[in-house]
Image 1: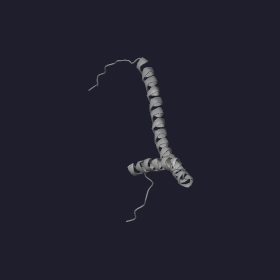
Image 2: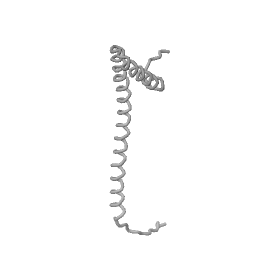
Image 3: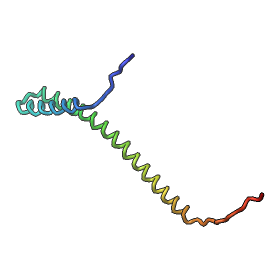
Image 4: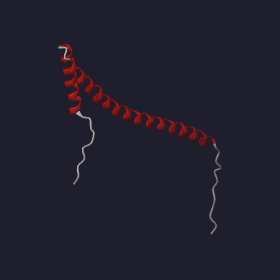
Length: 96
């Protein structure tokens, strides 16, 4: 059985972003330029990837909702046109 490592964002990623943010603030206060630079770029890259994945999910949900809305509007318009048509009510008998 082959197991693949997949990209995933969970509580560990959020926790590491919080820790790295505090490291960034501390290193900026102590004027440690290299550590501040590394932590800032980690925040930009990891946070950017996380925000990108959330944005893609929200975009898919938004497009799905828009398609559903347009479908409901077209169905309502079709139902209104269908309701206005007149039908002939007729009874019939089968000859024996």
